[in-house]
Amino acid sequence: MKKLISIIAFLYLSLSGFAQMERVKNLTTFDDKPLHFGFTIAINTLDFHLEHYRPLSLNPEIDDTWQSPLFNPGERPVTARDTVYADIAEQVPGLTVGIVTNLRLGEYFDLRFLPGLSFGERRLTYNVPVYDVNEGSEPLEYYSIKSTYIDLPLLVKYKSSRLNNQRPYLIAGPAFRVDISKTGKEDLVRVKRGGFYFEAGVGWDTYLRFFRLSTELKVSLGLGNMLNDGPDGMTQRQYYTSAIKKLSSNVFTLSFHFE
Image 1 (cartoon, rainbow, N blue to C red):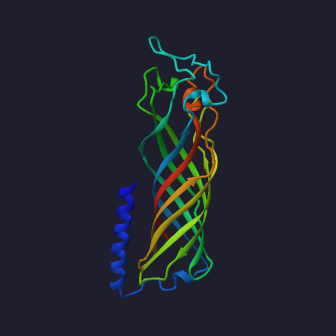
Image 2: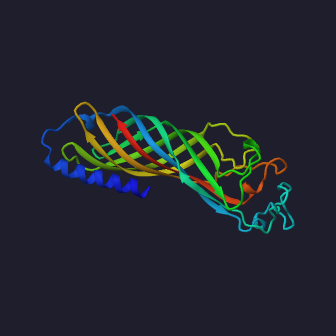
């Protein structure tokens, strides 16, 4: 992600230098429209922020004498005294498509509603072997959580003065996301379907001959605990979920708006 931010910063500086040389202005009345529309194509990465019970006995639902009833022959069962923790294995690129609805509030402010559909994946690794009865009897390299989100952000856009055919801006506001992907009661880790986010980002408007292209880098921070109930512990190992105290969802998005 740091490399991506560096690339965007370099592009912005290059465009800023180009803007100083530009003479012919495109779409000179574009920003005077009270309402306009467009579409978005974006690349996203989904992330989790995880807090754990270390050891498992700190979870109020786990007794000090508890041990997992599921374990392989020759394998020591996981007990309440053990520490189990998860982490994101790697960032997996996803895709977002959406619609732009832009309401002009003034010379420097717009209100933007950007409904869209996002496809992404998170891969969790654990410090213990990962067994999932849905995937067979062999341990997994990671546990995959795939999501399909309906995104409903409502953002305020603050724009600088126009530099010929360039205009940098800041954007921030709330968003609500609903995960419509299929989940099951026996999933190792289940995430709640809906949640609120706070979004903030930076962007750069480029006024071309027939449309405006906006390049935008945005972070969406989940505002609540998204962890759902885990399996019952009789057919799936329950400690993959029981070890997690709080799970919040974060989304990083590089967007290209065509308006």
